[in-house]
Image (cartoon, rainbow, N blue to C red; front, side, top):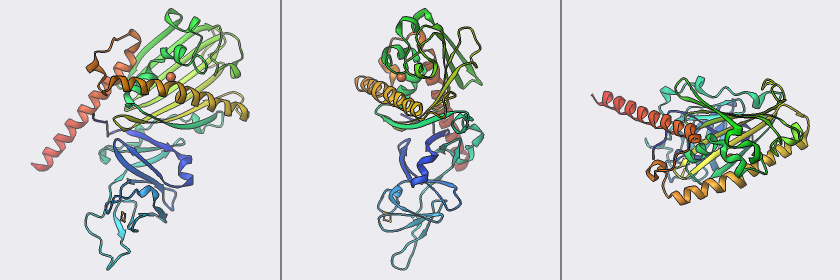
Length: 354
Ligand code: FES
Ligand SMILES: [Fe+2]
């Protein structure tokens, strides 16, 4: 399994850095993230080059990070700048790699590929998370399955009336089959939109009822996917026939990052544009999201992964439904980008050795 290294991945929520370092494995690489004395974010390999201790358990001192085991100190470039032992000699391999990292709109973004390709303009522009017109909650869970299975789940929302009947899914009576209009399209070649519309839904989803009331409305779930695995979902409830901008808007973010082939970091956020001062609603919104993702999606995706026994979906010759179009296109785009990236890396290496 290969990953798309040349891509921005969410490494966590900015609020997590307020209480210290973050230590996580992304794309099978242990990483440590901290803020220096200027409040600048730093990302380094998370494994000390001496005896491989977790640097995330180290101590931030000014702009540097001290290993918790024998006290080597690294600066933001990853160079060892202090050896407290003996004559203080610093061996040449006492260094770690540093990675481009930025904080934007409440999230931390890391680039694990070629640093020369890291363009911060490519980071998602979504700003409702820091917009005062929205109340929001953020969360995290670990999914014990390949990240592409999690993407598949999010890109095919036809599972919602079955798996999420008590949380974020509509009543199967009026939200499956011909009742649901699905519009699939792509932008710029690499961005996928998968939009669902149920006109005059008789009963809103359990998540929507406290915000919209128990009355009919047009229900929309509009998903955008960007490589490698950034997903943004706009859920809306509007008066029947009214423009979608009227009514309740519940946007959510689903940022997936492979920890390795079989484990996925799932960072999620959910917002709303109504009753934004109501803490009880905020608490309930978080509860619905956690129930849906942790108790409904995660066990199902994990079970699928267990029964698949492989991360190569197509080797199992799955039955393909029309509603799989978005997830299949996303897989195609990702494969294409991974291949392109490895071709470019090989060409670069050949030029260097020529
Ligand atoms: S393991 Fe880090 S200083 Fe020894
Ligand atoms: Fe789901």
